Length: 245
Image (tube, rainbow, N blue to C red; front, side):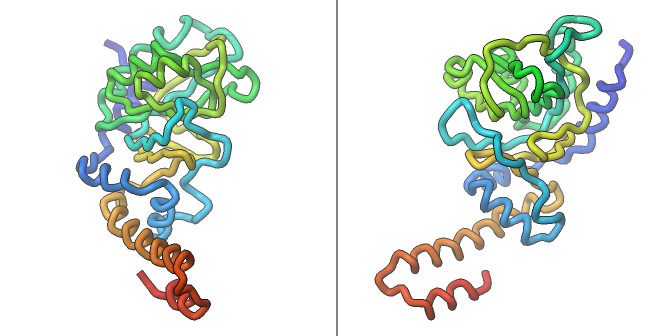
């Protein structure tokens, strides 16, 4: 079988991903994305204005989902008919590429026509397919649909909006870098999403994140408890704020 360029890129990216232990992923999930972002700052591996989505992305399937996994990237178009084929079912090679990534996985769709077409990138059928391939949910800069059905499926969808029709939605390529609300995402990136948005967690520090996050949260809790205590004073507040972790 002839391997396409996008297949080759996706296979190469998947082979470079070193999966973390499940216990580490679950330890990260105990904190919200805000605390995880603060913990990443501790390591000074990137600028503080990098590594997270800008405002506008939300979990449209409701609840307070916390979604963590390795990104399976895909770029799509919806404004015009594809040069060949019809829809995502004409690119079943992408499903094979998803299976090469470690679990858990997150499908990450960039709709290149999101600002003009307003079409849905994913609905109930595609969500069921992705869940069968052990994707925990989907993140997209575009719109989604079939909200009640996908909610019952317990498949969180983080998107900009909802839309009635998929219009001409079709896959352009997969495994390539995408950008979602200002966040660059590469295939295999470790992503964590909740009600605040999405943060990308660098692989080389991920295992140390829970311990740092725990220290940050403990200090924050101490300050909050003091502010709500009848023993509050400016002197005690300054002491609590200035105390190192």
